[in-house]
Length: 91
Image 1 (cartoon, rainbow, N blue to C red):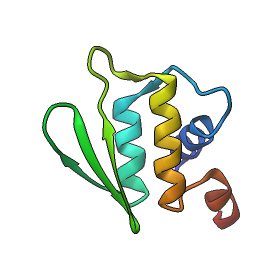
Image 2 (image 1 turned 90 degrees about the vertical axis):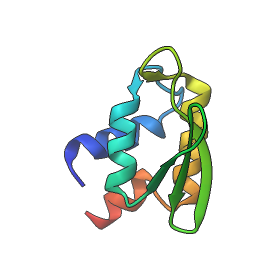
Image 3 (image 1 turned 180 degrees about the vertical axis):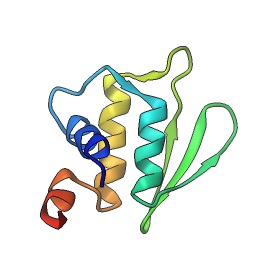
Image 4 (image 1 turned 45 degrees about the vertical axis):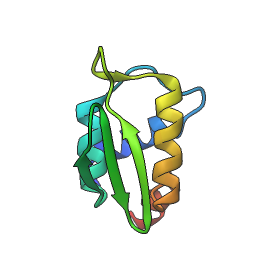
């Protein structure tokens, strides 16, 4: 995992949630960890990560995720087995 992706993953799991995470970076991280992204209607995106499958929402009026969306993304990643500890232990 690149330093940039590792730092982004740590930021996602940090409390309080950051309000400065850009969707393009999130999308890159998700693809890097093996997630399949499928555009649904509107701003909904299906994320398949391991055995987990969730719906996330692309930001509507900006490119940054709001703190509640960051918390949801954190849950999605954790259900898919992607946490900072997982990647720090591997590498």
